[in-house]
Length: 269
Length: 77
Image 1 (cartoon, one colour):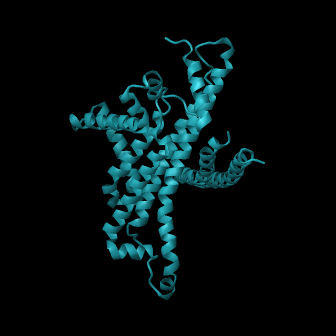
Image 2 (tube, chains in turn yellow, purple):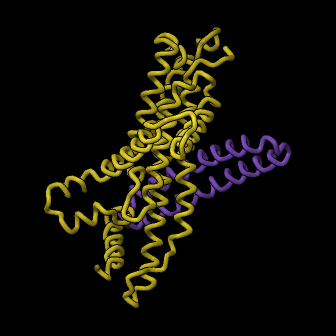
Image 3 (cartoon, helix red, strand yellow):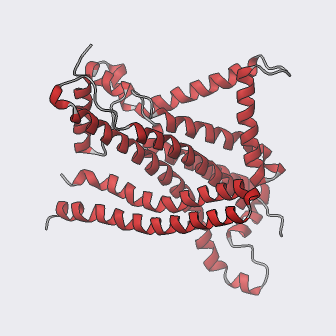
């Protein structure tokens, strides 16, 4: 085993810092440095975030399938755990959307579990959070955006959707304000996925960069002795990353739920 | 002054100014939440949820400044 692996890690972080925000190596990056000529490893390295996302998808689907397979009225441990999660998410979504929110629970609940798992994946040594890349968060935000618009068109009808975009004009004053309301609502609808994606990306990347910087600091603190270990300065920041990862997944899901509730017909009309 | 110098001075400065604004906002939000929880302890869970959401929204504005720093910091060297 290479005793200077930690120095390689520090070197790698320093080299990465010259091109962009510093980042810890993950197992794909390490494979790429050793076997970069192999076409498959090059492919994995090019699609790094997709590979990690697929790992999460396979693990979450496997857990869901295993909990569903031998379901019974007296649940076993795994089924109990999954049922707790599903019930908690269902209460959360239906608390905001009302009883009609049950049909959106699968999407929003899966969104929460998926984003939470991706945020936590980066804290495991040798892995990277896919959400620390803008592509993943923008694609999630675009999915939410299109589903919200489709829900609006489906439940309000096309005319009702356009009226909603124009600010629901009822009397002369609101009809006169329609030319102002339409651009405001359109820009608001477009700003929602922008803010969702940037918030998630910025928080997770910020946490990862923080951890990377402290790993580098810990390794360089003992570099005089050329030891294979470094002082674990990053430990409190891993706990902070657990907290902010959970909060950001919750905020993404909650804001998506609120966008649904804004688009669906309100009760006060 | 080259553009690298300008970036190196003003990127962290801009981020710090954004952080000041969000510190004020977060302080107000959390203090209002604490006060509300003190007045009505049985509503503490709902208040806490709303506080967390409000804090995330306020924090997002500082995160936008941080993302700008990430995007531009490669150009300094």
